[in-house]
Image (cartoon, rainbow, N blue to C red; front, top):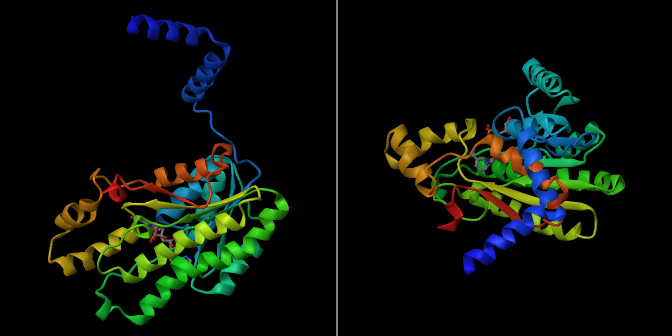
Length: 292
Ligand code: NAD
């Protein structure tokens, strides 16, 4: 009787114009790879000449956004990277040098870009040491680049978003914005700060068509993570493979690194209409780390 009842519902749904239309749309999207377009939007991604920032910039460009790349360097290869992305995705791309450890540079980046519909605060650095040995200048640099820079860029970008009538602020936090690890005192403090900043800006823009959220990745194999491996090997007295398996991915129950593309696709989702009511919160991409 139960099987008959559910079978009947299945047949009715197959012929219902609403469910049928929704399913056709879903499969058309799947088959054709059709996706939302961010055409005409300008996305500024801080710290985007490498790693996650570059991956997010490429994914936003693939979704049609014009992108502004950034880092503190001003090398020919930085500008060549922007030119390559412009050509590959048929969008406009520029590289603007700005040092995210300096508040005035952060604000100047937004002003020089001239428009900012999507702001991705991604620039970040790391240092691994016990608190007693943690160099104060490393503390200052991590708090400035990983936290204070977002305060400055958001303050400069919100008036542009308000006058454009639409905006998305996406802060790249970390699983370390929700939980801690030893020897990363400045990074954990800065990332918890970014989560708090995202909640506050989410509230301050709640009545505008603007959202502000933090993406919290677990480990993603990028130059930043590569650079931590030698220090972590020293702290734990382990070889490279053991540090990757037993220290880094030990906290990530999937035992797999997340990818820059997965972070980029999450950013594209946060720019979609489907995410218009998601604000002041976090999205984890951590293979189950923060479920533990
Ligand atoms: P990465 O070292 O590859 O990239 C960092 C980027 O920031 C680079 O483009 C670098 O040039 C830029 N940058 C550094 N100092 C800067 C400054 N003063 N001004 C402007 N740009 C500066 O590292 P990543 O792993 O891609 O990290 C990117 C972000 O993702 C960071 O905020 C990091 O905390 C976060 N994150 C990374 C992981 C991971 O496992 N890789 C996990 C969670 C969160």
